[in-house]
Amino acid sequence: MRQVLALAIVAAMSSFAYAADWPPATDYLNGLEDCSASKQPGSCQYSRDVWVKEYGEAVKGEYQGQRNVAYCLSTGCHGAIRVNKMLGCAWRFVILESGHLSADSSDTSNLEYYCGPENVDKAERRAAEAQSRRMLKMLGI
Image (tube, rainbow, N blue to C red):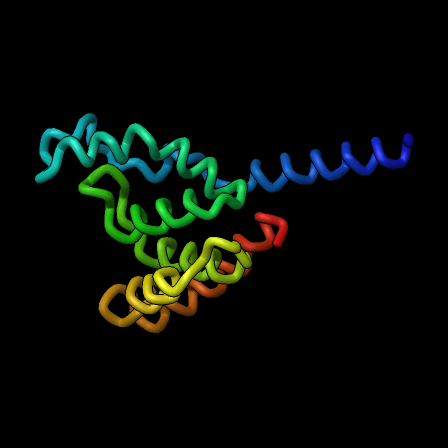
């Protein structure tokens, strides 16, 4: 029984170590005080309001959180999030390499588009692939 408890404690501690490696969600918020300058202020504000929750889900390995984070990093989510197309592409690789049972052909299409030449150049794609390998390790995959 003690061995099981010890293993559970070690597993929990390693999860905390991985969580500490991720940058804070707020680092990715656009510097705007509010979304009034956005063409779609309601969508921008909604994205700002849910970002911390969705980012937290993504770094815990949750499929939908990862999809949402990848999308916002690639597009900016109506000005709410600072665009980082390379990192958005890296999340697309993470989604497919994680083995999520919910992953489908739309995830493959999203990788092809958001990691394609219309969004990132060859160097950025290579950087995204390298970053995704680090992220997968941080996720314990």
